[in-house]
Amino acid sequence: MRILLSVDESPYSQMSVKMLEALQLSSSTDITVMTVVPQTTFLGGVAINRLRGAQTAKKEHEKQRAAELLQDPVRVLSANGLTLESVVRWGNPAEEIIKMAQTMRADLVVMGAKGMGDPDRFPLGSVAHNVMKYSGTSVLLVRERISKIRRVLVATDGSKHSDEVTRFLLDLPLPHTSHIYFVTALQSHIATYLKMPTLDLETNRELLEELKATEERAAQDILSKAETRFQERKYNTSPMLRQGEPAEKILMVADTLYPEIIALGAKGLTRIAAFHMGGVAQRVARFSRHSVLLVRLPKEQL
Image (cartoon, rainbow, N blue to C red; front, side, top):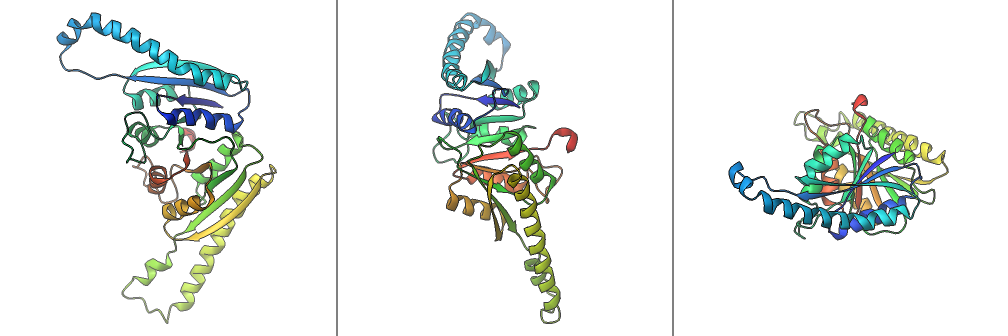
């Protein structure tokens, strides 16, 4: 597996390093540690040329600071038997992270959910938001400092994107001491039918009951299939079926379980092809108090 770890001077970057430690990655994992020195694009090439000498000196200073910033993550992860490469880039941070992930064909980008310049009142930083939205790579947004991965909450809806979450987590792989919780939110069609002005509730009561039973059976089947794949690898698992809006229910379950990671597909059954991400994935990533793994399908499977 190829992982791109993006760091800056924020405490969230330190949390990201701890997350990779907790994953207990195989020594064959290829990790690139990257930092981006933000660069402002100015108007007027003449003005830039006049300041070329000052800009060169500034760049050397920035390069030195960036190299120092990379030292701790490289030292910590190397101590865990991992082989790392360090990279410094200049430019727009989100754009450079996305480009680097493409260049190295990364399977996963790991980064803090917030950066140095992000206001405390915002639950998700601007760079993290742009990377999670526009990257073609799976992204792990880290929000907490952890030492072990005890609980992982996997949201599944039976889509091919949810199936990819299961495959991705098994390929990492997660520590076998982790307890894997699966949640499916049943956003029933019955509520839609009840809003139809022409519906005769008494006449169609039997139809609605049958619809409810069918939906519940489908949800249980989705949970069972996801559980089985982890149980075959000797993980402890627990299924949870909830009724209501998916993002809201996922966040509510997470606030009860306190998982180290919430994992879900970047898109779901109801995705619109023109969107980069599904609405459920975006809301969970933006408002979760816990680290969120957004898994994307390989391009050849889209």
